[in-house]
Image 1 (tube, rainbow, N blue to C red):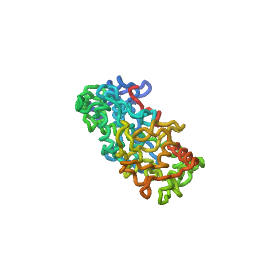
Image 2: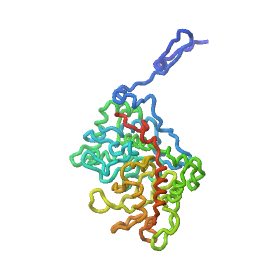
Image 3: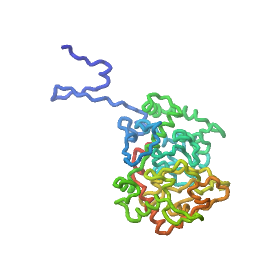
Length: 396
């Protein structure tokens, strides 16, 4: 029998560790090194021991998923995390995506308008919880981005936000690519994720979108209850009577008389925010808030909204202001807004579900009903999303 030989190209892939008390050889794979990544991030980005982004647990009752054209990978999301937090993505190295979407407040902002390199944003920054689990694939309040991928680089190319607009004295996006291409940790990260050091806008978009879609929240009191119930309409065993009442009010459509006054039923919130994902119905129109952060003119093109999950923390603390103007600062105020809809002059885009029989709805909610819906909305909040290191700032 011929003796087997270790081919040279195989020999470099293994290191042989001899054991004093054994005639058998042990083979240990050599770990590839990434010196620039290690120097910049230390243990916070370990390319040989990636965080789990691609195979996170998703409850069986969650059936919506808009990631089919860009599936989440551990490599892509790891690169996306670095891009998301890197202030070098802005023209003056002071602003990152995370400046407007903060982990501490469910990846939204606790300022009404977010600060960019040349001023402030025109609308309040939207929370980025569970963006993957939605039918609506368009982004921004006015849905001007056809996909999350397209959205990710639009703030970078905005003069006010991150400053690579190619106008108003700004450099263009190619200048950003040139800047990133000269950074050693990006040479390693793009080669790691894509097999090549070459940086393109599409690669940046895909990596950022993978990271953003990986940000999920399914550890709430609602999820515990839903896992043990046959459907959303059934009472949840872990809910208080008040929380179950609030859930029923949220899910049940109202009945109106000819004057738009509720005579029976619930609030019908699920007509636009569908359980169990609590994402926004893609057919939703304006919600009755038409103000603008500039204080001039009206803004009726706002038809999108983030998931209602993690509107507040478990303890009820708000995750920043709500609505595109940040005019709502509590759950009670949000419910109050929908309780009495006044059709403002010029609002030709008000959602039909808010104007039964052509008039603004009057839900005539009691204090008990408001408190119940508030109690239910608080059950939609988890805790992991605020502290999980895989979604945290790797530069810290």
